[in-house]
Image (tube, rainbow, N blue to C red):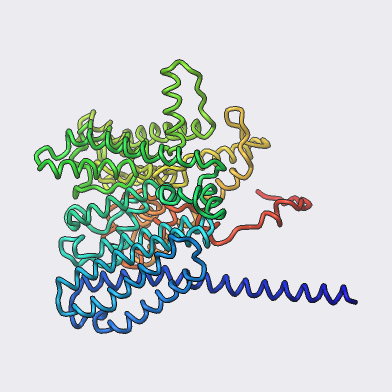
Length: 585
């Protein structure tokens, strides 16, 4: 009896502890969400005050209420950090927050009617609030989020911040860019898409263009790579959980591999972009001022390598359709950015070993990426050349026809540049371009799409099923069944989401033809940026759909759904269940 009673007591104690832990975890998550939301909301309100200094403005008229909301949000952050922040780094955060609240409540109120001084203190407060978000992010991303949730949340954070910066009057010539258009442009930049509802060469000031290219560079490098630079200290100085999460990000147990990988990514990116900028500098805008020539060359080099497709020219790159230097440079940048860092590293090592006379080996992924990419480029360019020879290319000389055909085959692989209008091409060619956009670039690259490796595995899985083979073999290596399942899932999700979005947009826009809508949807979800000219004319709801498609395409289909929840390995990985036959086909 005594043992039974003690067991019951122990069980009740454990149940109570579980309930308390659950409640505590719930309140932690709520406070974290409020912390991030409050920080972003604070910056939004401050920027709105900069944007419109008007006594009738909603944000000015309800100033006291807004200040109270922000204060409550920051009290949540303050309490949460005092409760769970053990490290000295995070003890500084409440001090920064208190200073920020002081500036927001006192100085902004004091200089309410003095424009210049109020702007100064508002900007100072914005900087402090930004620091609060960054430091909060370093802590929350490790302690609360799974790896997939961290990737998605990081993109949302950068897109939100970029939208607010582009929303400033300082970013546009007119100073009247709507927030939806700012959000659309920021999403397109961070997701390295290239779709735009405005003419960035005319609408954006130099500041706006600098913000845009910065967002493109961040999106191209990848949030994980940039975060690793800041978070690398966790491997040596952080908690055990911080160290495990940092190693998990790069799928390794060796911190030295992380350092070398990040170093290679950054150095190779900036070196390639620098060489591309130098090449473009020799031929682009030769009649412009030196500063503008340098900026234009750097802008287009970064945009090309990151597969973004943004251009500082109204007609994109049409004026350079016959320029061999511009075409070859842009195509090389697109290709290098699209094959992925692992393949680029493998190829560079093979070239070095070849020069030294040493043995070199291409792994299976490098072979698949290179072969698939070369085949897609050759088949696409040949098809465009012959199918458009007497159509959109009829007025061009033979050399330019070849150059344009090759460029238009490379660019749909998620780059978004064009040297000829796609809406001048035939419907059949547009269909081929949609297929090229759908496939996209390669894994771990700056591009989007379902990826070349996914297409390869998917097609060979079909061939394997037709010929009743047990598994896929590439270069003497068997492809894992998990990889085959993922490829089928990605292709199915991509087609389903693209078609569904196209039908919704078709209904919203009341369009007479489906092709431009489908082209736009695939271009968005594959982060390509090509358009048949309907992007600036779509409604707000269609813009929001395109924003969602660009976001899904950049973070990845499986990443998005695995962030919602994952199957516990213990339920399906250990227990072997009986099999059952199902008749299909």
